[in-house]
Image 1 (cartoon, helix red, strand yellow):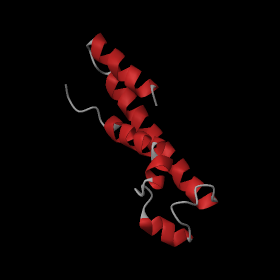
Image 2: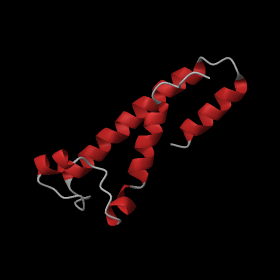
Image 3: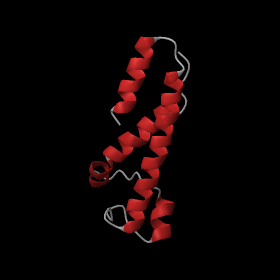
Length: 92
């Protein structure tokens, strides 16, 4: 099976966002340092407007990748692959 466009990237983004609070508590920072510095916030400022804006941007990016993946799966000729692909995208 050929690579499914960007859907693996969308899944990666979704997983990173899902685990972001727990990762931050464990000392793993998933938001770019440059972004934090540019907006004068810390990784713990999850309720700040800049932090939320960054998360919204990442969510939209993941959605774009999932839509791209859906178009890829729409083009497959094997029903089993389509079902698995749609199921995976629907989880996110």
